[in-house]
Length: 297
Image (tube, rainbow, N blue to C red; front, side):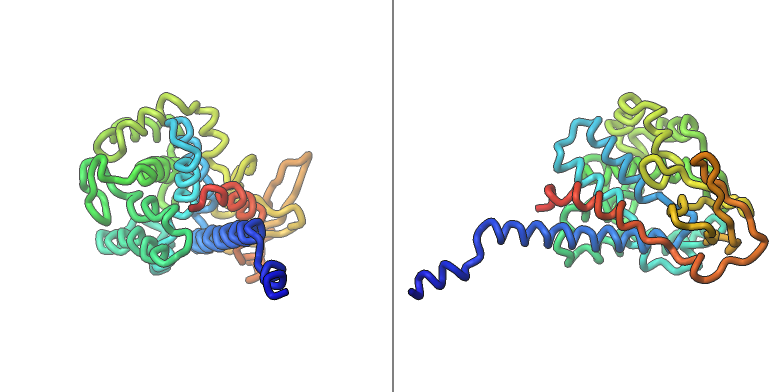
C-alpha cells in the first residue's frame, strides 16, 4: 500500500521537465523585461535592444554559428546594456556628447551588467556578451582590455552590431548615418575596433535591404516615428491609443491613422504623466522568450 502511495504522489519525469521548462520561460521573460525597463530610461534609444538583438541573430546565422550560439547572440544583443540600470540620469540622458569624466562612468556599464547577471539562473547564456561587447581586437576596449580571440565569440558579434546601430540611430547631438556610411566606418575599423572575420560577414553576407528592415525600427515591420515638435524617435503607438506623449520634449501628440499609416500631430499641450509612461511590450517579450527558452542550459 505504501509503495503504491509513493508512486501515486511522485511527480513524473514529464511533469518535472514541464515545470523546468515553465521556470526557464518565466525567468527568461523577467530578464528580458528588466532590459526593457533599462532601455525606457533613455527615450533616444527606442528600439535599440530589438535592433541589436535582431542584427546579432542575423549576423551569427550568416556566419555559420550553431542554433545555440545564434540564440546566445540574440539574447546577448537584447541584454547587452543591462548595466545601464546603474548609470546616473545626468549621464545616461545627457543631450550632448559626454565629457571624459562622464564617459568613464559610462564605461562601467558592462561590468555592472555582468555583476547583475552573476547570480541569475540564466545569466551564463548572455554573460560574455554583456561584459565584453565593448572590447576591441586591438586591446584598447573595456572593461578588461581583451584583444583578438580572447574576446568571447558572442561579444564580438554583439559589439559589432551595437556599434552599427549606434551609428545609424539618431542622438540628441547628431542625426544617424546612412547605412552605407556606417558600413564604411566599420570597414575602416576592421581588425582594429571590430573583429575582422565578422566585419567580412556583415559586409558580404547581409544585404542592404535586409538592414533597412531593421535600422530605424522598433520591432519587425514597425518603423520608428518621429515627434513633430522635437524630431526625437518614438515607438509606434498601440492600436488603441489616440494620444501619446513624447518622452523627450513632453509634447502631447494626437494619433491619426490614414489608410493604415500612422501620423502624429502636436496638440499644443503638455502631455500628462500617464501619457509619458513607457508602454510595456509583452508580445515582444513573450515571443522572444519562447524562441530562446529551448536553448537555455
